[in-house]
Length: 160
Image (spheres, rainbow, N blue to C red):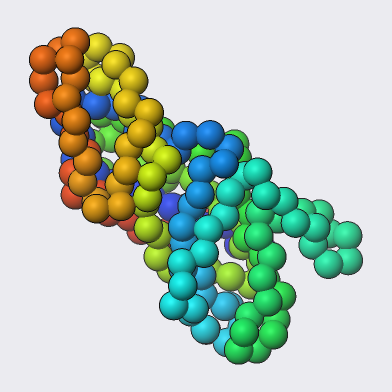
């Protein structure tokens, strides 16, 4: 079992506390089989609200899947206590936003989508519906009379 950290990087304009919202947040990943190296074309998601028992009573995981190529059963689990926000002081640097515990899988790609939230850096104005699918997001903070945005979203995975 190996832990992988998803590191997030973005340019923030007048916002902070960028984070996944709720336990039903979907982390869209592409996962490589550690046995045969197969990487399916389709995006798969893992979420905290879904829990599947592992074979042999070895606990639970967020997702268990059988590799279509080699038929090996692999699993991935979100480590809930590692989920953290990306803040203004993290601007334009990589920061680990979440860790995954993997058995037989390795995350190789991440697709940010809807379900993120942020707050205005000066005003604390909540922005509960941030969609990062286009790697950029903009809005307007009425209290501060300023535009807000998240730009150039990128990521990488690291072994923890």
